[in-house]
Image 1 (cartoon, rainbow, N blue to C red):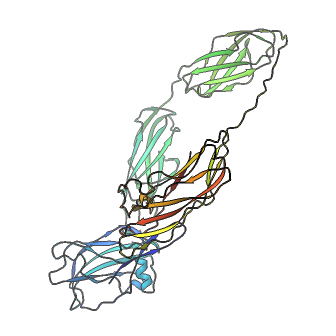
Image 2 (image 1 turned 90 degrees about the horizontal axis):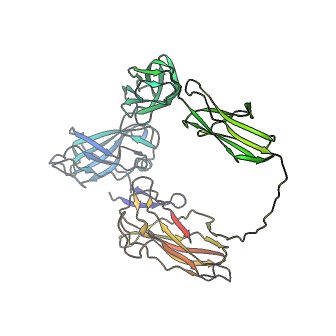
Image 3 (image 1 turned 90 degrees about the vertical axis):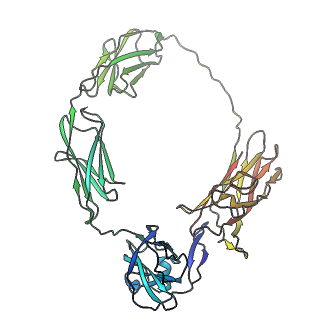
Amino acid sequence: MRIANVLRRLGAGTLVFGAATAATLAFAGTASAGTLGTLNITPATGQDTTAPSVKTSAACPADADAYYAKVFGPGGFAPGLIATPTTDVNLSHTAGFPAQLGLSFKDIAVDNSTTVQPGKYTIEVSCIDAFAQTVKGTFDTSIWFTSTTAYQNTDPNAPVTTATALAVAPASPVTQGTNVTLTATVTPASATGTVQFKDGAGNLGSPVNVAGGTASLATTALPTGTRSLTAVFTGSAPNISGSTSPAVSYVVNAPVATPTTTALSVTPSGSVAQFTNVTLNATVAPAGAAGAVQFTDNGANLGSPAALTAGSATLSTSNLGVGAHNFTAKFVPANAALFAPSESAQVPLTVSPFTGITASEKISTTVLAGELLISVENENVTLPSPVMLPDGSKLTTAGALNPVRVTDTRAGNPGWNVSGQVADFGDGQSHSINGANLGWTPKVIDKVTAQTITAGPAVTAGNALAPGAAAPAGVGLSSARTLATATALAGNGTAHLGADLALNVPTATVAGTYTAVLTLTAI
């Protein structure tokens, strides 16, 4: 059967490659001569639109000169639907070989007027005598559709026995209030569910989702004493068994109050006039000490306690009375068991009577520099589906860049340059189209009379370069290329720029939706 690549357009700016077949063929022949081995499917997980490849675990018998493939499953797949008609592509009599599967599961269903349903599907490759249509032996493997669109090569309902281990860091003993991290490791790593961390019979926080076989919880709330810490895993499905880690004995010691020191500075210092704004700044060491600072003036509290932030606290006042003042700063810890209180030395300040002050005003104006702006009203460019050239050398498509608006209001009218550079096209998986295969022919759509703008030179699209291949000099937009240039003293105003686009695609490009970002830069 002839398999052709068909290019379909799905949505704005995307290219999707799929497989089509002329028809589904039925095969006659004798019953299977026996199982020859198994199949290895690639990819192991996929979608109903995936056309997987399979490799046999052994060779076909010497008297088999061809093979075909069927898919058995629920609903319309029950009798076995043809995935690959009779062919000898890659057939081997000496070792396992890749069998050619030309259709996706969705294509098989559509060709046979049925649909993909959740459940178990078996792919069977039969080695045959093509002339007699006699089956000489078969290879098979199974997959499971967990929905109408997604499959995996493992049975989602197979029993999963788990084991859970618990690690705690840092190692004990620790001081109460230390940030302690509990990490549970669940095996197998594919098991999904949650872990409830426990201190004895009590829960530590809420259940934590397991990701990649691990779950972690950080806490500073462990009480003093010898703790018995465990991790209890609960599976997300009935077939996933729960498990509990061995208990970890963990010692938490009562905290010892850390000594502190407090320093005070007063600004301005020495002597100030009445009504002057005076700032008192206290610094407490160590900087991690939590609490507040009570400022005093001649032994009396000055305002309310000020909270510490990064080891410092500040109070400002302009209501100090005339005369001598002696200020102190007293550190009041939030937890006296963790940090000890401390008091600064006195700092004197004399406030003299107010005698009046002078004021002045400075008047100025600023000439704005202006700005250079670039924008597009529609950032999505949709290219038509690429079409195969008559000589079969490559696929081509073309389109137009959406208008680019450039506005220059800068003083001095220095002129500007707009360039563009594109990244490789990607399908969101592991396939790509070399960005150097995109070329353009720039043009100036419109401008104001005072502007002198020149469109950049045309850039030839790469000749269907393979992903990762280096582009010849001057070819493609994978390097920055000029879209347009405004000369000095002739760039102020608004202009609209455009370009005709051309894209060459290698014929070996895998089916998929390919998207790339073209970055436009104005300087």
